[in-house]
Length: 242
Image (tube, rainbow, N blue to C red; front, side, top):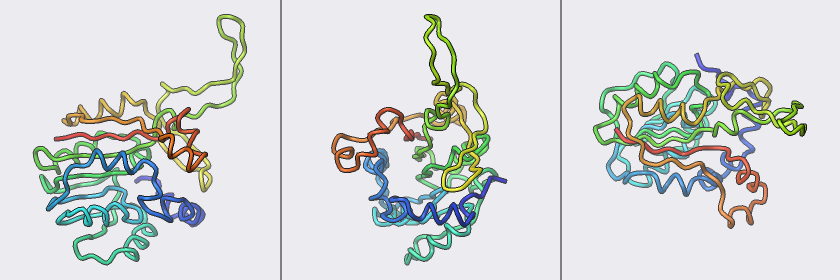
């Protein structure tokens, strides 16, 4: 079973203070880029894997989706999503993406934001998603960029010209990474960008767009802290089609 860090009270309380928790999709600087990757949602059946507070579920309904299902491992996140939702066209379900079973050809869009880096193996979930989509259906996802999931650590070494440096990141060393973000011991899985994209293609998807997202000049002017994302992207956005 996946680590359920979002039901850790300290983590949940910290997450609630983030702009994307307080302001929804308007608080997610990558949202405009995600919108450009989405298909027309009018009368579509949509599922959001790792739905959190349900911001995307409600947005999809506002864009005309006929039915939206939100799935999350966290009881606390689902409780908050239900508090914020007053729409019979949206339902929320408890589910572990690591062991997810989905009905065949039941959806036109599968959406997942910042969840895949919590999974040790992408193949089972991607296979489940592929068979759950209608032919021509879409998968739109975001995940932490591998440059972000293998942060630079301090470590002195000497290069071929005798210069000493401490930048070491072990990019090609895939596997578990522990971080102390909002709470101690948050477990994530680092994999290269190539591994993620190849896993999508191996599951039968045709890649349509890949965006190693970075902020615009206007976004940096409004929120100077985003300048760090120019030097080291935090996330990658992918759209793919069955």
